[in-house]
Length: 287
Image (tube, rainbow, N blue to C red; front, side, top):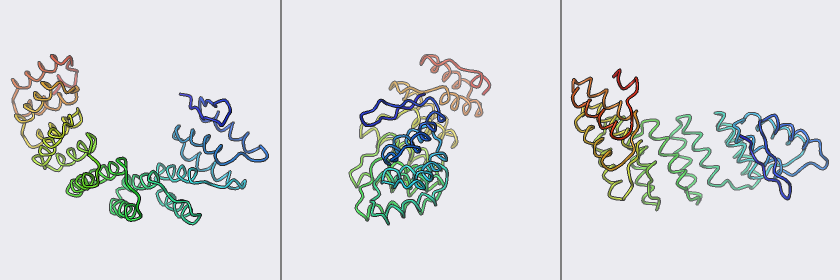
């Protein structure tokens, strides 16, 4: 897919591939006077969208040597690239450079670094950074809260994740379906099914409609605890409420029922699938 880069008063550039973008970069660095960092940001930002993070880092180094000074946006792009490359240490180095230059990091930069820490399972550091962010007066947005929740759940910090969900609410951010489903999945994976069901009830009271991810997590958790009957009731309830389920969810329950010798109930679920317009596949029949 071509990537448009909007120029100021100029025709948009459309990149069919990274080579096309790099060809333009090479033309830009040959100009005198050199284009501004804003123009380089537009070009390199497009290469970021193509996920060529290492190339972006090398090109920023190249324009530094040519005497083009960074601005806050270019440094935020660099931080993102380093985090995507798993070099969170370099990301923090850029943050240090920003602070020395008197450039205040924004909520996006904090979110990027927190996400980088969470991806490396450095949850304690991520929590410290979140606390530092709020202490300095930055208001975390929903993305930051969701990032923290995802990181806490990924590392099995179930209790902390639930407390963080409550922190969101206390600070005026209503958890959405993604936040709830993330924590419900974590609770189910840790065998805390009742707590997960409590969150499901809370969602419903708030008018938040469960989606396929929520349902699949709960059904999986129930089946893991041998609660196939409860899982069947939940699935039927979701189907009756016109919540779209996919073949993965149905097959998961059918497999659990068959393993417990509950063949007639498994056949009923297959019938429910068909009524929902989902045809069993090879995996379903092999369970």
